[in-house]
Length: 110
Length: 112
Image 1 (tube, rainbow over the protein chains, first blue to last red):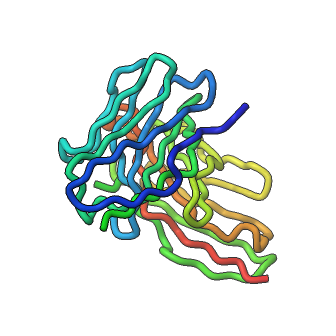
Image 2 (image 1 turned 90 degrees about the horizontal axis):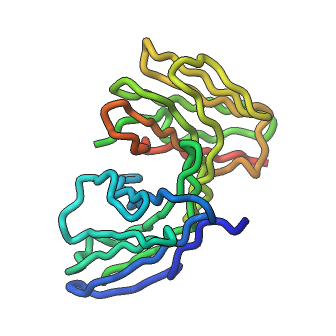
């Protein structure tokens, strides 16, 4: 089985722009979670989707949003980018309570 | 806010030695998991221990859980240079609606 696929791998944006990140979970996995990882804050939970519904949400501003499609693929969107949004964004699909992570999207905001 | 706090933040040992990492958490949990991350990559699941279990083994890994102290430890025996990575504990807390909350991690360096 293919693993969790995240695209793109690297992204450079400027302040004020918006960005969309994509995640394809492992086939058959219906739950997708997103995390932001920075050196200072570590891994912070963004949100979780299950069967196209947001099931859990972290403490991030409304600029961060996500969605899940009927094929379980998920996207997250960040609008009005700030310098502090520079981070590794990790997506994970869930099976039997365990998370299976993609390699992440490294976002740099200049 | 972080549920898990890990100790030490960094650990440097020689190949063949054992490495022990500790994790403390704040609220009651359903389970606790350990993950490993190589630099700049995604995390890989290592082991899951439930709140009613005290010890679990997987290959060279041994995890203990003490719910009375709200702490867990991960022991890697006979470490190898390839074990060099960051190790994270993650808790599925009963008041967190099923989401996994990660600690800050321990950076392990195993020197050949």
